[in-house]
Length: 151
Image 1 (spheres, helix red, strand yellow):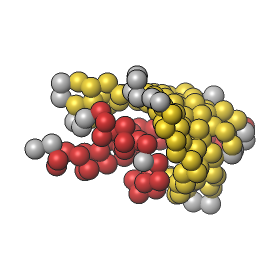
Image 2 (cartoon, one colour):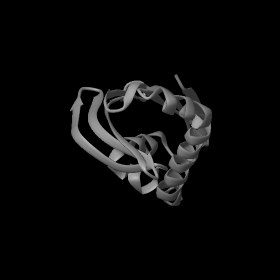
Image 3 (tube, helix red, strand yellow):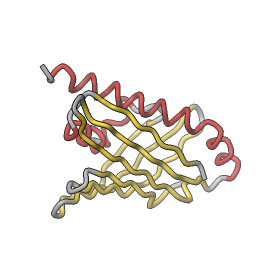
Image 4 (spheres, helix red, strand yellow):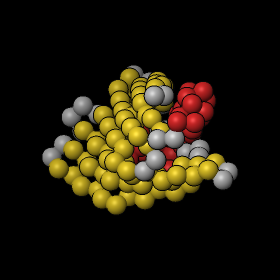
């Protein structure tokens, strides 16, 4: 199964970055290979924000939609995403947000397996590159949205 992680220091506050990650319906505007996003449910239960959403990911003639269960825990500033439908055999990714003196450190870990064995091999070879592109996109979006409001 492909596994990877990325860590970045972004010059924005933690709450802004958490809001950016939880604004799933905006992903097609800036996340590479994200063609569509739809949130079915969004509920707040105590310290948890619970979201059920679809993402359609693709490039060229290849595209697939998968359904995710997204849980944001306000107590420990983590977002956990698990697959609940679609072409993935397994998906788990975790976002961690830690405020620093000059911004917020974001850590993003992902572990997944695609049902199609051939695609799984292809994805394993290019996965870290793709994850870095996605991290770049989130960082750029955060800086565009929030850095001008810092002053």
